Length: 523
Image 1 (tube, rainbow, N blue to C red):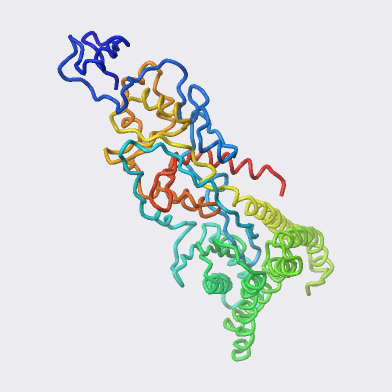
Image 2: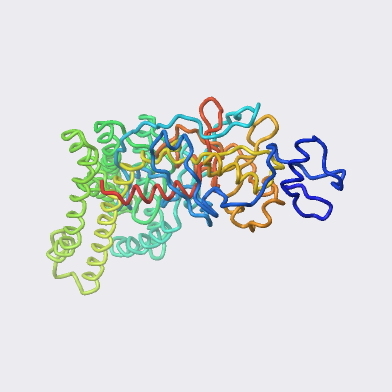
């Protein structure tokens, strides 16, 4: 805050000059005054202030910016997002889906080097640059339904939509049991419910095959989710080689084929036309269908990822494999939409065409439309995620960081903004007497302080205390950067060098802007 005379008005320049010359306060000053800023010059509001984010005027570029020659992404003066990660809340994951899978996300992203190693702060006189904070904590459990367990350390969730599908399977399979085993009566629905649970247990085995293979390749798996029309295993990293990609995709259908063979052997040991015989036969057929469907060569199915691996191997470009497999997936979606009703209506699936009624035709068309929509959407999402992964390395903490000025807790806001303007900085870091960072001055809070009040407002009242997750390494880029920001949502982050020195302040709004800008450019 500024000192003032007995009248409560700021002192004049003459009074300040007298005090500096004589070393004594002018007559009439109160015996006790508010804390002074470290510099000799008193804070004032003359001229435009360069606030972090450009609240009242653009900041002059500093030496580090001129040397780097990079374009800095300005942040809007108000309303920074509380969610650091751009458009997708979570970083892209590689989803291995079973049955009719939802959208999957897989493609390789090239690596880029971080640059601009020069310091971004003006160190306080005699102060240290700051200590390196501990590594950010891992994010909380991803959630996604009812937690069933953690095989191999990976959480397995049952989505609410699964209960709808289980009820549908129970109703449909119960109707079939009424024709095969009419003596069961209403107990047939209990048997049908057991079949639904056993079928999804087979789907879980399919997903666990993907999970075990991913863990074997040291790829972290975020979760497994059983949901409408199958299951999804979300793998957080991309495979490094096309060979591993092929293996990772193939193990799921392979386990479904193995289960189908085991159920076939089990059917041979029971009486046909009994409850065990019907259940085992149904599980055998369903697992064979799961394997055959997932082997179709189009994204987002496992067969599409296998095709992607083959094209990747031939061309040496993962993006080429993704494009080829995605377009095959779209062609497959159209084939399912048109061909499945025609195949059913013509009796190609073993059903007498004369027994197919109007309602059956509608149901076949509806099922074909759902499957086609899932495949088409998944193929499109695969292309979008491939493009996203291609641009993710452009998000570098070092390149997006704002230069920061360290200020002590009692420094008035107007004085802090004056120092930032002189240094060409756009962020403020509150430090202690030793120069160690304590908190970050929030951009939105600065905008909310009227200009005439800034000489009487200390920066400590506008700052957010630093937590472990708000310390970000300057070397982070791409998915690693988004993962750290997602783990600790905030509007600003302190960026530090590996040595612990302060590099600057990273705004979540700047990251989001850079993400949108990168995604707008063609691949």
